Image (cartoon, rainbow, N blue to C red; front, side, top):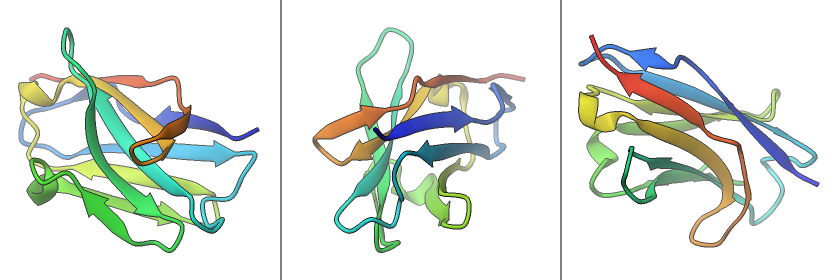
Length: 117
């Protein structure tokens, strides 16, 4: 059974880059046809899909966040990483990593990131 775990700073200053890592166990991120996503949920709002990295290493980002988003991976550690640049308080949210794209069948527990000076 695949398990995902987010890690990273819980507090980021405005204009800085938010960086989170998702560690995957119980399955390889390079297994054919699996996609690995980042999703967020601001306080009191709905879920927002940020982007994915595919088993092949290709990436796709939400158009609304594309200019500030980068998702990469370290296959030796079975991890994938989100970087979101030039953050503002509006980027405060619980950030989740998950397997899949529109149908997400495994989730991390989520990590709260607050953007504040």
